[in-house]
Image 1: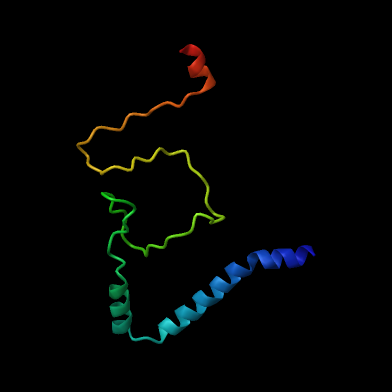
Image 2 (image 1 turned 60 degrees about the vertical axis):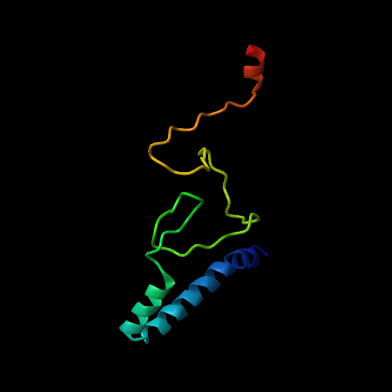
Length: 105
């Protein structure tokens, strides 16, 4: 039925929300000094590296997702995978062989 399908689609979100509420309630019973030690141990201040030469932002925990993740949406940004240095020139863009470019050659 349609109702069952809607509930089944949202079950992961409901489960995650319930776990989050439980964790926050348990955390509220911890002394502040213990919470600070836990947060400092996790390393929220450390940068999250994306690749070699790119340290990335701080303030999170890195989690790698598989390539079969349903939330993946390809973007139109050209990514340069080399070392990041502000003195290096911008990489040149190589145009692909489209039918229009082939006809001009």
